[in-house]
Image 1 (cartoon, rainbow, N blue to C red):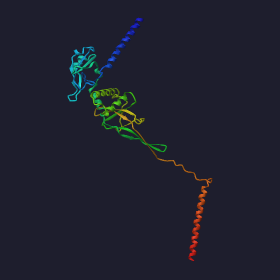
Image 2: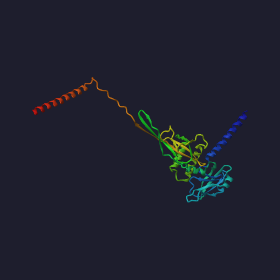
Image 3: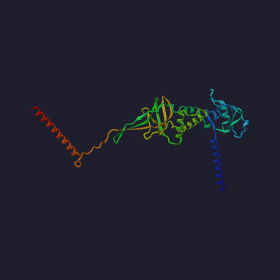
Length: 332
């Protein structure tokens, strides 16, 4: 019984070591590299800080192979233009020869100095050519106007008319458009996704193709992870070509807006970042005025005023009477 228990624990430890080794290999793969998949068996390998000058590269399935005995090939360029980047590559022949198991790469400059040695290559952790196009056209595939606002029906509270203006999105596409809104929190995948989308949209990605690929890979991975499925039940149909920000949304809160447009059998998917807007305009429509109570007999002011008025009236009457008598005497 004791022997069986020992054997079970040894088996558990062995499995743990195998899993740990595989996890470490996956984590360490493609270090300092960005890999673009052209098709099923063709890849381009961009090596960080080494895209401007020609070099040589070689593959081996033996991590401890003698680097000087490997079969080196000249680096290719990713385009025929003058600003092309130098790349290592995998064609169908190299794919069939080396990539049925763990594969390692070595690279050296024209003077024979090695800048990559026995680095694990994981083709599964690459970005597809069409995914680069997806990230480059993100927020531009479905035409929208993100600058519009909507004035909600006014509310009257305590004799004050309150007008609330909120943000809205106007769809400028034919066909049927559906949408989903997801609130962005301070951290997590959606927060990182929004950060990268805004960086791409603002044109602030550095002018370095390797860095652009790195950003494209991050965005593509998040895009593929987060985008709702085409048949997801939460898609809502856009009405009157307008999408209002959520009722509960507050100023400056952000939402990821997923869009799906269908027109003449063609389906387009896109994403936008909705930054919520909110503006209040209060207007007083009535005013309560306190009426002063009349003076009472307890206050002598009223009697004084009446007395003055009476004296003034008597004086005026006396003056008029005296004037009238004087005129009669003068006539006689």
